[in-house]
Image 1 (cartoon, rainbow, N blue to C red):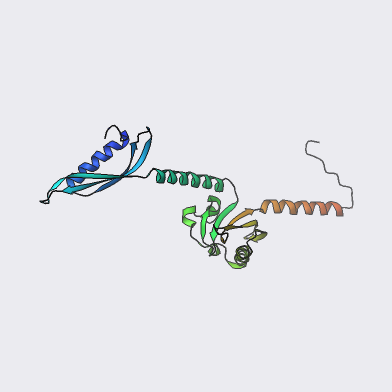
Image 2 (cartoon, rainbow, N blue to C red):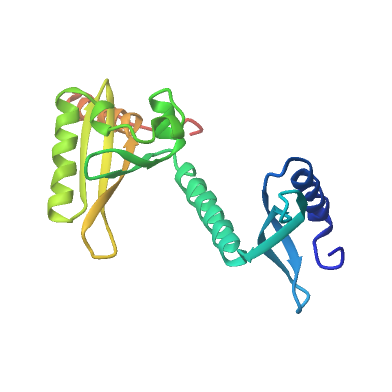
Length: 219
């Protein structure tokens, strides 16, 4: 067994055998075993007691099931989740994915921090509970329109003195039915104020009775 079990897992197997002999309870662990091609494969290893005809503990038996493909799939899923999380948090936009009832399935840190929470704390919360009043109702109407038509929707609104630009996108299942919806909300307050300031300046210049010359600071 020393020649085929990974050195880091050997002590685990030995310890399980001792536990079974001492207490008679089975033990299970995932271990690495060297195959005939010289590659490590993952096995679900079960150690359990066996008893003689008189009921006395006679020793231990073991069985193993190859779970390599499952481990690889789990690792790929973790990598995919890490990549998705990085992409979500790479933007300063408020990003989320909801189901047809409005429950948050996935969200980024910026959206969570906007509500004083972490993503795990906010997952499962209904978006309708996050934005009350007329603004929330209008956003929900637009959400329902995307589910109903299956078409993306972009719109702007204002909440608590902040201007937002929203993009809602339908997400279909394997049958093409829209069952989820992704949204991206960007705070455009500073840009909006800048545009308004430029409009005011342009209006003031046009209405000024005297000539107005605008120069750069360094000229």
